Amino acid sequence: MTEELLTIGDFARASGLSHKALRLYDDLGLLVPAYVDPASGYRFYGPGQLDRAVLVGSLRRLGMPLARIADVVGLGPAGASAAVAGWWAGVEEQTGARRDLAAFLVHDLARKGTAMTAPMTAPRYTVRHATGLDTGLVRPAQQDAVHADDPVFAVADGFGDTGADASAAALAALVAALPDAAEASTDVVQGLRDAVAAADGAVGAAVGDTGRTAAAGTTLTALVRTAGGFAVVHVGDSRVYLLRDGGLFRLTRDDSLVQAMVDEGRLTPEEAWAHPQRPMLAKALVGRGVEADVRLRDARDGDRYLVCSDGLSAVLPEAVVRTTLTAAADPQAAVDDLLAAVRDAGAPDNVGVVVADVLAVGGGTAVSGGTASGGRATGGTGLRRLS
Ligand code: MG
Image (cartoon, rainbow, N blue to C red; front, side, top):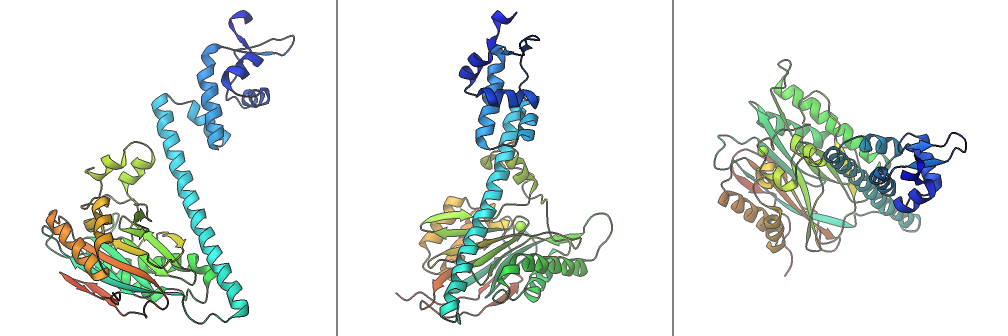
């Protein structure tokens, strides 16, 4: 029997796995030898086990935990493909969160180090901004709302019969419940989550609770200035983009059913774009408790942020968003050009948009603004760049 099988040495060479690894995978049931000599205890493997061995080794090199590997190798190729895609999306998500936290700590500790020798009395940067709201060409009413007044730059996309009340209540409550970020930098993430929880409560009070299914609710996506930079606060499928060094980066992950399917490897991003279930949210503020995603980011001179509802992001390809943001001389021009592009594309949904530019101190002063909701309006323009 053994002449058809590979010795552990031959199998190790063929699979690229060490003897030690093969013994471990045997003990764990991940890769059980085809035959174990009862007298000598030597392990023998069938040539047909090579594929599984190579897969196990590859997943180990990826860093996948052994228990997860046991699940993956038990699936067929298609199932395993989706499982690896889903697991890797989670890894990238966690890595992004750790990167953000590291960047925040670097800035926060540097700030405290500076404060040891020179009192920190003024922010290192300022923000100029503009907002826009457009009902669009199809919807009968405006349910999006925007807010831009330092330190909060936010969009809420209401849905349901009283969606307009929901989005307005969420923004007002978020602003009212904000922690003093300059005073409590170590607690800023929890403070912001608490502020979103308060906003969720305000939404519940505004729309009422009519039973098993929520009658109305809203997304809530905000850029909030903190002591060390910005926090991106997010629930739903409104988005924050960052234009930096000519590149456009999406900083939020949609809380939507379609995004979940992308994460699981069941849809490509291109397929998600046109998917009929794209507007279906996995998470929103409906007054029943919600945990916001909060990410901390650095602030850099020249950064341009876009906060927008899906009335923009589901209509304009990101390449168009990038070129429009890049070409605009100032936030108001960017808002105007983006709204015009959405109208050119049919404007099937309400649009709420905030554009915010980061300027190092010395490049401008604090700007004014406010909350707006309603039909078509733009306002809250910040300082114009000196040219
Ligand atoms: Mg919308």
